[in-house]
Image 1: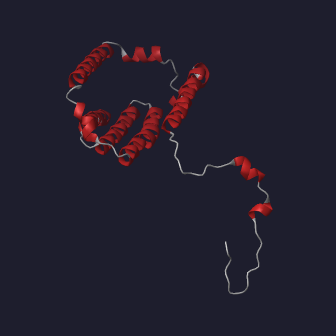
Image 2: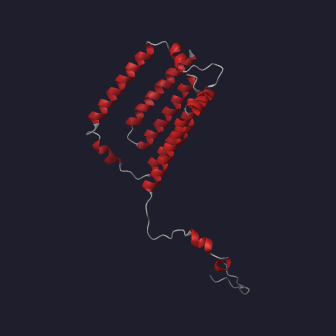
Image 3: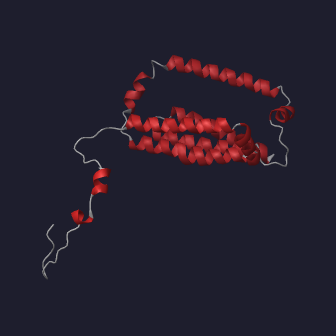
Length: 204
């Protein structure tokens, strides 16, 4: 009974927070609603026994992605009125995609409802009950899907390097660092010994 109440509570909050995320006028408020949706989605994962996914939602998405979005939105000077100017023009396309997504979710729900969930779980993930979720995911991730995991890391590395290269700007009037000149410099070229009289400062 308590588990059912917690499930419906988390589910209602997730749906409400997701709706507020896309309907809030202030982008900062949208990010805060998104964080709330992530927390309640993590609660749903805990109820399903997927504690590792719940931990990832809190640590990765809330602790990194959502907070990064929040800092980017707060620090950048963005004209949001200009962004909203084309809302009416793209509204039919957005509504069509939303209807298509809802239809797919309904069909998927009916398919899952008519399928024996226990038999489906045994066929999809034949893992003994004595093996924890984290161990089962680790065994698959670092054995069967090792190259896929490394490929995903390589793609993220290339994306990070590309973002740095694209956002780099050449600024004039600066003094760049000359590593060769610094290494060729001798101590007597950088240090000057002086003996100032008492009561007088050092002339630079």
